[in-house]
Image 1: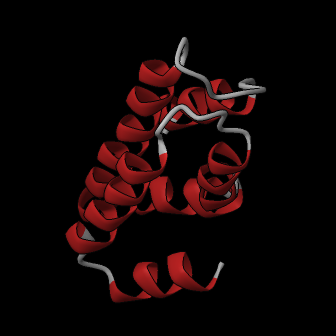
Image 2 (image 1 turned 180 degrees about the horizontal axis):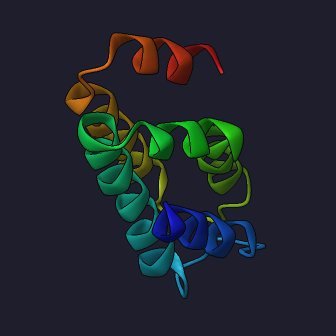
Length: 98
């Protein structure tokens, strides 16, 4: 869970997504997806942290602050992968509703 917090904190520090930091942003988003997928199967506290820290809002914020960096398609793909790999139906519902 500490890793998830660290990745989220790093995402929150990003003020703009451009071609210079695009790969970093995509790596961070991919890390979030991997951690959440693991947490869904092995550690419910990770999913709770994901909800408490409003990570979906961070994904949306990355779209909002993107300056022609082409993060839209990979970001949506990461969200899709995350949802498809979740086993916990309650978690999927929370993800969609929040």
